[in-house]
Length: 242
Image (tube, rainbow, N blue to C red; front, side):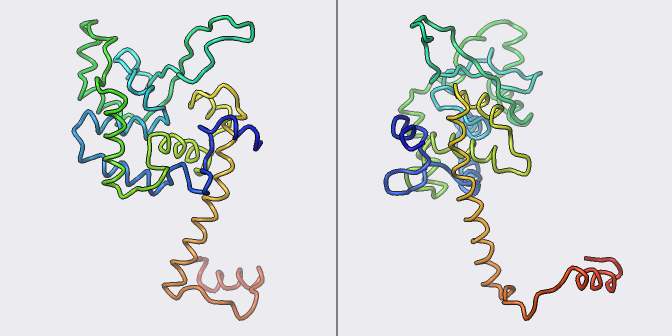
């Protein structure tokens, strides 16, 4: 596993100094809040990064034809897929569909007038965003600064990694093969790297919760171990209320 990380540094979740390269759930929320102060086109771009886990360069390629309002998804061309097969033959472009919230699709429709374009059949292949890659980088950095997110994770790639971890650490984690397809990985082994961060994140949240409880004076060492029967008796005495 270590050798794979050395040959694919873009998939590392920690740098050489042990600093995170992904956004936590709290940072992702703050990023969205900070994006609200951008103009509507840039704000939606930030939301697309957050809700799809796409690469910024993939988002910059989006056109009206790739926004499927009825299906509730956005279609990306996977830019990091290998362009040649084992026989050194050119492969066809690889695309993937990522489901997104209806509210995001409504915003995209409103700002870019998608339904009118669909009806007219014009401008369907024009890119939604005309900004360059460097302009996009500066915009995302500006939003990160406003959200007080600093460090090597404060990038579009950090958002992408944060999405991957969020999809595996929620109440209903996605199967690895589903997340692989959503993120445009060619191999599930690449997607498995996000499993490494889940344990770290859960421990961090648990320790944080204990710290908060301790500050409130609600955590103390118990005088004795309470048995299951004693717990049931206590609940019964309260009239069945826990």
